[in-house]
Image 1: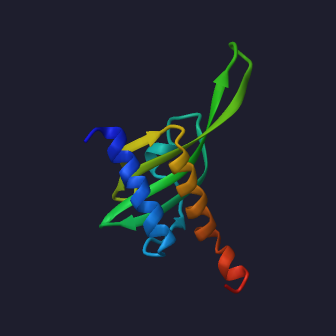
Image 2: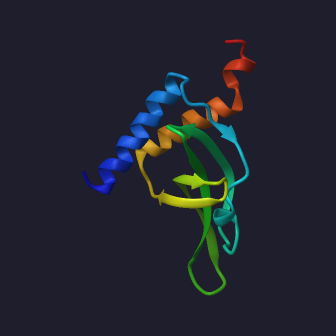
Length: 119
């Protein structure tokens, strides 16, 4: 099995577990390595426990320079495995429809929208 298949399989399993409410996502501060010594910005970081591992999902904003002084912000999503709440030992930052779906589900769950609506 190649890395792309493994990543997609992990994301698919997390989607299923999130929908089944077996996985609970919580807003947390990003791990040290995602917020230190970088100009990138992580406006939202969500984390869950899955099979005794800490899995993180995050939105990443990066500067995209068009010349030396002109830039605009780009956004992408990332998924990572975190150890000891600070070390990112595996991560992928790329566009993926399944990762976007997982991020939206996790964000919805962490926000407690269903609780607000009394569902």
